[in-house]
Image (spheres, rainbow, N blue to C red):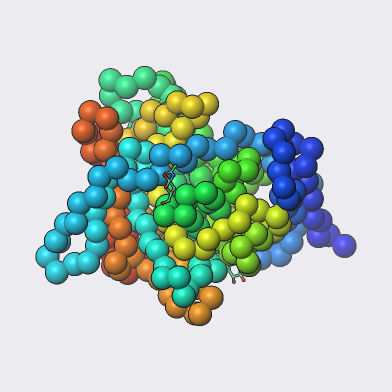
Length: 282
Ligand SMILES: *[C@@H]1O[C@H](CO)[C@@H](O)[C@H](O)[C@H]1NC(C)=O
Ligand SMILES: *[C@@H]1O[C@H](CO)[C@@H](O)[C@H](O)[C@H]1NC(C)=O
């Protein structure tokens, strides 16, 4: 037997009272085969705070004949989709490059960017099942990246044992089996390594929103400094619903990040139904 599964119960880690005990078990695969998971470790990090997800300014942009709506957020840029009440999102996939950062001049270091895929968290603002990669660039330009998953408002976990570095192609595959259980698979395609989390008793999902995002997130109540990042493509990405409907970027809301000074720091530019590029502005 050379397949190992690690189980982590959050019951002992979560300080606040939770009605159900979120738990997960994780495994690691190399080229699709289970391998020894003893090096796989999860480091609990404070939940990213997503309270500011709601866009502050809506502008319906008639972009030629296109149907994409543009809106502005103070902390993220990317594409956001919603289903009708008849369709529940069951799967969301994003294939993207780990953020590759350079320092934004005149702004203190360290600087950050987090790229992720998530179900809910927009119109359904009570919960969000998400996974992605965060890169930090420090004052000498050195970068480090880490993969993580989070079922907001529960804790977030860094996935130690899945190596990622700026520019690596990764995929995030999130399955909502039902409203409270799911499977998150993060793959580093450069290395053929995947980590799979099977999660139970998560905060109840609506399964109505799906998004592909670069975020200038909050840490300990403060918004981090967003770094400049190389064009970040989400390719061959999309979502599916319980009725088998495919959802791509056509008709998505393209969210641009505008800071409190009015500067637009990054924008989402649609390419086609399964590809979108997130562009950082100086
Ligand atoms: C969440 O959505 C509800 C209903 O649309 C709204 O009343 C509430 O203000 C939202 N909360 C946040 C934090 O955006
Ligand atoms: C995504 O993950 C689910 C659950 O593990 C799996 O059934 C599905 O085949 C995966 N999709 C892709 C495109 O890998």
